[in-house]
Image (cartoon, rainbow, N blue to C red; front, top):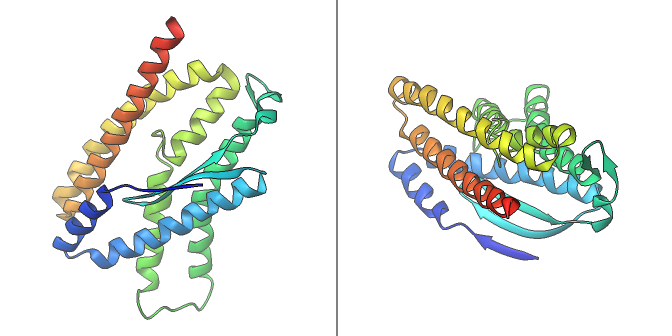
Length: 213
């Protein structure tokens, strides 16, 4: 198992510190880690083994070793592995939803952070990850579903275009939110989304180039 640290995490730490939101950032980071543990638990339940863990600006990123046997079990135009990927992607946001319900219907009261911040942070993480932008959970879920009906090549092309449209719409809404809430953190989240979309689109373009050879 490989452990990596994305150095951009230190940039985000400094930015949130300078904007006096370090407590919120720390809360979000802890909840993001719990979110990712939901993915890990589902992956282990599915019989997969952890290959790499990367500490990123908004939590962890975990990748699993693939079982060759799963490629041989066809499900429509995909395979069993795609079903497992969809289930693993759903597990993260589902974990945040469960945490919200626990906070709402229990007498839990942490002195360090209020229940309102916990609910707000969990809701923010859940909605952020459900955006249909690959490789966020929402993008992975949508790509997996498209893959089942069209195959992997078309799924990659469709999700590339969908991610681009969604990040443009998110930028427009986020720009209004920055002005309204006067929160610079939204700006950096939008930049982060653009970075992952551009990186992923380049991978798809390289894949298409090889496919045409």
